[in-house]
Image 1: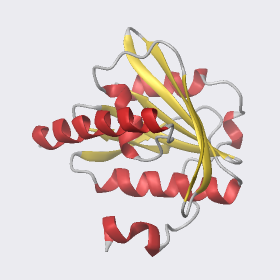
Image 2: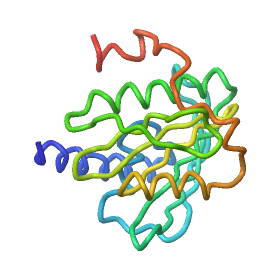
Image 3: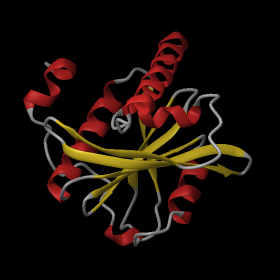
Image 4: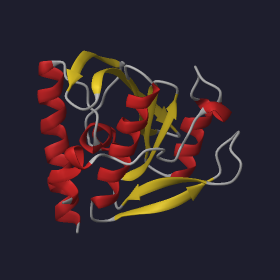
Length: 180
C-alpha cells in the first residue's frame, strides 16, 4: 500500500514539475498532493490559463501555508463558468476516490448544514474539494483538524456559498481511461 502512495507522490511531483514548466494548471489529484510531499513552497504559484479539452479554460493559484507547524495548501482553479467548475470538482473527486488507501472522512465545516465529505489518503493527509461559482477550491492538509482550520481561515468567499459535493456526473468521454 505504501509503495503505491510513494509511486503516486513521485508521479505527482513529476507532473507538477512538468506542469509548472509548461504553465499547465494542476487540475487533478496529482496537483493537490504535491503539498504533502517534501517540496517546500514559500510563495503562491500562479498557473496561467490554459484551454483543456472537455474542461474549458482553466487557470489557478497554488497557495502553501503552515498550519500548526505543518505544511498545507489551497489550489484555487478558475474556470470559464460554473458548469465547467462543477465538472472539474466532480472529476477531481471521482479520480481521488479510485486511489488505493483513500477513505471518506466527515468534517464539520463552518456555515454548512451537517458534515461534508473530505478524503483521507493514508500516510498523505486529508483533501477536500469545494466549488464557489466558477472557482474550485482544493484544500490539502496533514490532518482533519488542520484541514478544518485551513478551510475556516480561507478568505475570498463565504463558507455558506461553497458546494462540497459533486453536482454533475463526469461524462464517459472524460472518465473512459479511469472508470471504463
